[in-house]
Figure 1 (tube, one colour):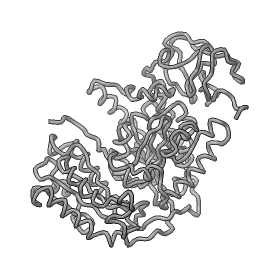
Figure 2 (figure 1 turned 135 degrees about the vertical axis):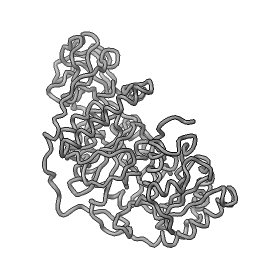
Figure 3 (figure 1 turned 30 degrees about the vertical axis):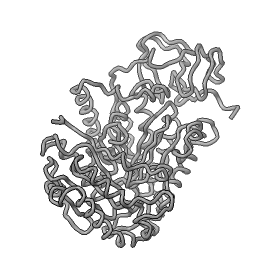
Figure 4 (figure 1 turned 180 degrees about the vertical axis):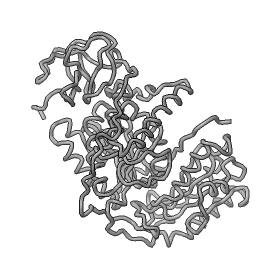
Length: 512
């Protein structure tokens, strides 16, 4: 490691490189022939060629911004001298699409086969709510089944194959139009979870007078009550206490059947993996995201599905996906998504470049274009086969794009509603995240983060930046971890109990 270069170059055309370690002013950068003119924080950018005022600044071989002023070799490049501007991107629809090199025989994992032919990675019982007003009741039902932290005993102690009873509550469901886009998104999200393969059974709890009436929800989403999908309405069940008691009895009644499962070898074609990044830094696009891209390719080549989302964190890099679209129509759907977000943010008095957080910028990311170019690496190199709306069912095999906000809980909620039975989440700053009923694998972009948060990070991708592991090696190691987690191995976030509170449906429109 002592012989590793101080900087990382991603493309021969780049006029900036990234500091692998903190670089002091006056340090000569071997291989670049440049001396640092200022201190360059780890993960941040340094110019290696003269950049004229208004000239494009390039990283990944792509434009990430434009020089506000003349920049000399060795200068620190960040928000003070790099600005985002509109520029043309060549979508080249489908020009780089190519046949997928499928792997035979497919890799397998130990999954739980459901009667409908789907395979689960976990086996939960879910308590869903139609409205925030029933959230407390839903939570009390689930809490009755929590294990005693001291004795390990509880109502589930006799049912070892049930991973838990989880209440997924939210802050909406009323104060909104009873019909329209906002209600459609909420109902689609709840229905996606009600159908989710990782739930053995679900109870939906409502208040009774809310805009999101349970009967209308079921009708709109073509859901039918059964032994595995039951409903309770507080105002019709005798109030909160009686509803909690009834809910507990409903769950008890399905525990034996839910427990009567066993894991068997199933092909990776049963995996649908949500790709997420949060708390990103300057290493995200160098280490964890490309490694996840390698694992994504392996999932797709084994017949599985990966879902790339976070539309505002693909903005500016969408041309890298349209070039891999299986046809022009699919590519144009993605472009329309980006145009919608331009209009949506403008109508709400914002702009897409509001997305990078203070933490992102402290980690070295200057604007949303740079962030997006690194984020899209999670999608690997296979064809873009479909573009779907928020929480819509994902049915295609391969790389699918789902339109979601960049905010991680909202985005992941949509992906899981669409059918993701496992989540891979990269982070450079240190996000803590779970996403029940799907297990969430956390990838650290750098070794100091992995060592600083050992109870939260599942895999260290920092060896790529340190030169001790290739992207391909790390991606292969991640793929094996994904198979282990899909087979029942607990992730760090699961061990910590995360995943109940991160359920966050996308809330559209006015609250009235």
